[in-house]
Each structure stands twice: as C-alpha cells, then as structure tokens.
Image (cartoon, rainbow, N blue to C red):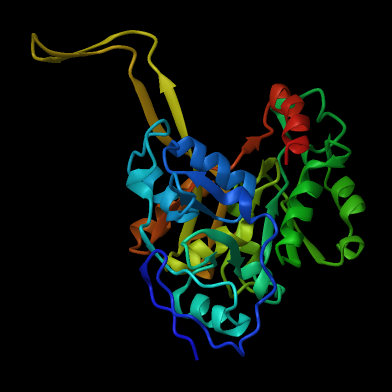
Length: 372
C-alpha cells in the first residue's frame, strides 16, 4: 500500500500499477490556482470564488509552490494580516500531495488521519493536475447538529416594510430571507431546525410549517416577550445535547455553516462567534504625543477591529448560563461562558456577508443573492 507523507511539495511515492484512479476530482479545481505574486486580497477572492477552502499557489513555471487554506487566512486576519500585502507569509510550503492514480480509499485515510479536507494532485513534473476534496470523495452525511434561527424581532429599523410582515418573510430575489438561510443550511447537511418567533409569528409558522416542504424538521420556540438574541435558547436545554449553530434571521452569508461547526469542534471551544473585520479610516492626520512632546505623525490612519457577525456555534454547556424568561443578548452569554473558565473563540470571516437591518441593506440584499 502506498504511504504518503507530509513532505516538500512535489515529492510522492509512485503507487502500484494495480491501483485505480479515484476518478472523483473536483471539476472546478482550476479556480483555486493562484500566481505566487498575488496579494492576500486576491487569495481571499479566489477562495470565495472557488469555494473549496484552499488555493494552490503556482510559480512562473506553473509548478505547485505551496497552498493557502481558508484556516491560514483566518489566522492571518486575527494577527493583523494586510489585505494588500503579499501572500508569501501565509503560504504553506509543505503539504500533502498525491499522484493522479492513487486509490480513493487511501486518499480518504490520509485526509481522515491528518484532519485535512483537500489534497492537491500533481504529476511527476510538479504541475497541478487536479484537487481532491473531502466533499467529493466521501459520502455526504446528514448532520445531527441542529440549527437555531432567531426570528422573533420586530424589525423596527425596516419600517414600513415590516409593519405587516415579519422581517424573516421579507422577499429577497423571490424568496423570504429566512428561506435563503434554510436552503443553504440544508445543502450542507443540516436537517433539524428550531425557529425562535414572537412578532407576527403565525405568518412565519404558516409559511415554513414543520419543514416537510424542504424535507427537514422545523420546530418553534415562542417568546412570550422579547428575550434578546440568546434568551430564547433556554427553552431548548432538554432538546439538544450536541454542538449547535445559531444565526440571526436577518443575516445572509456565503460562509458555510458546516465548516463553521467543524472549526468550533476542532478548536475544542464551548462557544464560537463569527466575526467580521471592520476598517475605519480617520479623516484627519493623527498626532501622537508623550505629554507635550510630539513623537510621531500618522496621516489618516486606518483603525481595524473585529465585529460580531450574528452567527454562532454553542456547546450544550451554554444552557447552564441562561435563565428561564430572562432577556439575554449573545455577547452577554459569551461573557458569562468566558468568565466561568470555558473557552470562547472567534471565527474570522472573509466571505461576503450582509445584515439586513436597514432599508438600504434590504435593497442591497437583492444583488447579494444574485452574486452568490
């Protein structure tokens, strides 16, 4: 049996002639190719376009120089990675690579043993000829982890659109906002949903019913009074014993919920929050001082911070920090979990995202869906 080790790119052992080709290459692998002189922003764009969590960096001879994974970018964003900077600092020069003729079962074992989801395929000249992904090789399994959609808000900032229609039912590109969320989650293997409702709840229940129309199960949590972005979760303590995804019902994103869930589990977190990088440029030149002494100048500096994207993964331990009928927003829940000594982590997003909270956002959502 062929053994593939994590070695310098291009090195691999020739398999036995009797081994059949896996025959399950991802047909869109060429979208992941990225010239070595690209910027970080170009790498992020390529990651989003290819949607395979990896880009394969090639040199001037079209040889595989290295790889950049989705995780490499997310870690870089947390460490202050500059979007207009070169990619050299995040390229992985050593990676698992396989030849074209390697058997599917062997490739799956390599992926499973090393917790990787993509393996470049190269020929004996170190040229990229394909890409194996876990999704294409493995049989897609239905997830036992539920998703909770928080859909109880009144959407006051979206008046007059929400005066007679709850925000989750507002139509974007021919479908309610919440249906876009539901369809994306179903495509990734989610089949169990809980929806928190309050304002005009009967309209939401009438449209989505028990989920039979989409081949899934939908149950409802009715908030007698608004309980914030986390308070209604207290009603689910007896229903959930595995990590679960929570999303605001007015947030659309190209981020994959299943990959977000994997990230949470791999990092042994108790609570994970998706965060967006937000940049704000000071319109003035900044003078830095020590007392009365001027020590430096900064011309219109850019301040960078991470903001809450409204999507989370929680372990069941989170229920221990919620009280029945107590209003609680998600940041407060995270703080309670963190102060108790449990692990709270951030999931840096680079994928397109929109929070439909204002009329302008609602108008822009149409184009957001068209581009997805």
